[in-house]
Length: 259
Image (tube, rainbow, N blue to C red; front, side, top):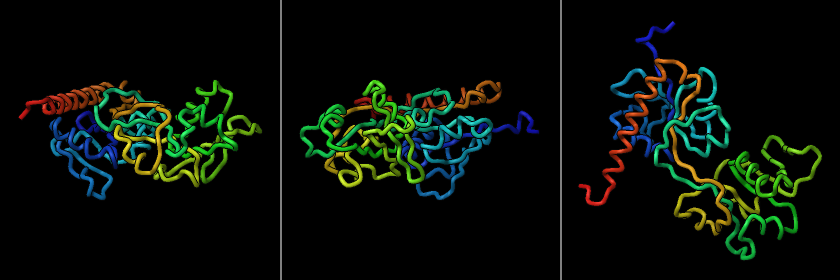
């Protein structure tokens, strides 16, 4: 059994698109991560001056799931989009002001007559295929837009799901493993995907946005059970306060006239 002095806070950090900004935030907050550069091949890291963290690196999509499971991880950094998509049992305790993306519905730009979700549904002459990594967010969106009249079928490489038994859905959500923007028109009629404010990748693939579903940024999340442990709660609060200092430094340094 661990003594109080031996205890560690289990932290999951994101690999990929959030990694560079997360590393910068830590440096501004006074943490010096070892093993957390984008060139490192290891999936484990440490803070140079704080051995009370046990750190592992994972995909942002998986982090809410693992943090939400009992006795796996105590805290993590991921995107708000993946917290919603996974419906994980976690608490968001600090928005981190980077990793801003929008989740959008997009179609081929030459489709001049399709400019809304309603156009996509009403003008279709066959069943609609939508490629997405966000199966749950997309399903919820379609149910909301159609007032529960259309429950989309869900197609993955392993299984076809239909939320209403033998009901034939005119919309199929097709699980994408990336490069979603390249799916239309051959594999999909539309996509639900994340995009930065510039929409650069969307435009580069001859797509146009027709609906905005969600906005998202990176966030610090915690396991609710960890917050009931006095030592972990204090350690999480200290970690949160240090990150807030780093965010304030970042904001002040971005002000006009700062040298």
